[in-house]
Image 1 (tube, rainbow, N blue to C red):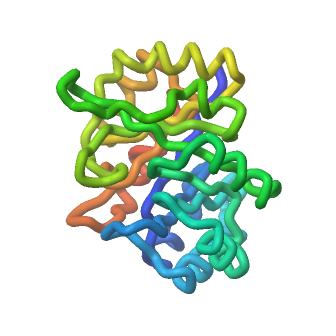
Image 2 (cartoon, rainbow, N blue to C red; image 1 turned 135 degrees about the vertical axis):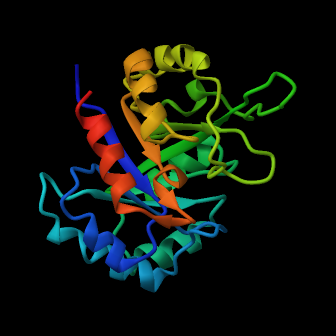
Amino acid sequence: MAETLVKICGLQDVEVLKSMLHLPLDYIGFVFAPSRRKVSIERAAELIAELPNWKTGEIPKAAGVFVNPELDELNELLSVVHLDVIQLHGQESPAFCQQVRRAYPQVQVWKALSVADQERDKAENEYSLEDYAAAVDAVLLDTYDPLQSGGSGRTFAWNKLPSYQEIAVQHDLPLFVAGGLHTDNVGELLDTYAPYGVDVSSGVETDGIKDIQKMTAFVERVKQS
């Protein structure tokens, strides 16, 4: 079985990032959308400049998280900050994702899709995973939240995963799982559903700050599975 990839999202502090240099991470996410974890272009550039100092395995790839960005916004940011991934977390259409891919062929485009916990929660994405299959390089499933685009700290109903995974496999599309993950529950996710990758943010924080002990425990739990 292939090793599950790990993305830690929402980094803001350079000293915290320096404390992570020994962790075998695959992706680090920087939030440019409205959020308490949002970073400025200047801070993101400072953080990403630390990545070549990574001490374990390959250098993690830098992912930028956006919600309904304009191409001008992406142009401005990418002229200053090197990103490996543009992660779109809003209502971006497959056509827009294709447009971003054509504009930045050196950068992967990921699309986040919301999954509702309850049938009464209408997390109906306007487009399906299949609609995005030819337009993006990966898909990330996150918990539906009517008030924000991700970062809710809540899991969704994982029994919905197999249907998404089946479609992803058909289209050779990497599928990441986010939403409410932490060290105590990620093992169940891995053992039951073996996702391609996992994405964590609030689950490795203490009082809203990234916690090196929690990050270390989370990464070790994933990588030992």
